[in-house]
Length: 227
Image 1 (cartoon, helix red, strand yellow):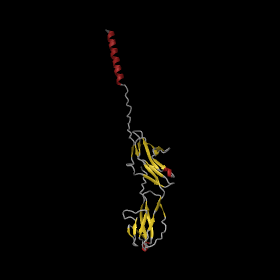
Image 2: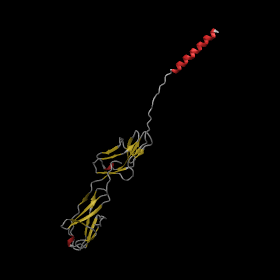
Image 3: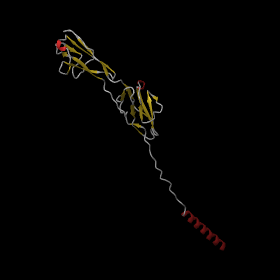
Image 4: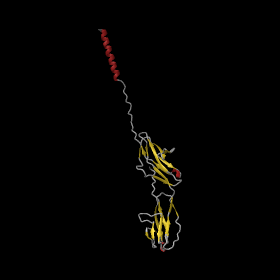
């Protein structure tokens, strides 16, 4: 009986020790861990094709940029679909351009998330400055035909023309129809439609003796560095 009681007391003590040890076990929370979600690559511009053109003359610089968003962005500029060595910034500068630099450029933007995105192309057009060949003096007899030609050089075609005549009181814009000397003007155009490269006055009279000039405009040019 005594031995049984001793074993019972020992068993109760061991259970009590185990309960005490379990109640004092350590607990630790590891964290929190912040999870960030990266965005796919998107191109901010251009929004439509055919609106972006760079123009300049030989020896000048041209710079174009790309606007993009996303995670871990990298850039690769191309000319005609071929990678340009070292052109890995968001901007591309062509320094001291030559005619061979003319062409179509785009940029492939890659990121940590999503697929690479490619900009719409920008055209780099290299033009000489718009100039013209002087109009030579003309001698004509009464009732003859006065033929004048404007020859522009450089710039961007198509050209538009406005013809003027100075009869001694300052330049006057000409229109098709009767001339001050009684002749017939053709090629001057009628506003707002502009004229042609050739101006003729048939059946010219003495009053058609004047100083003639032609104002030439080339096509509008778009110079947008943010493609």
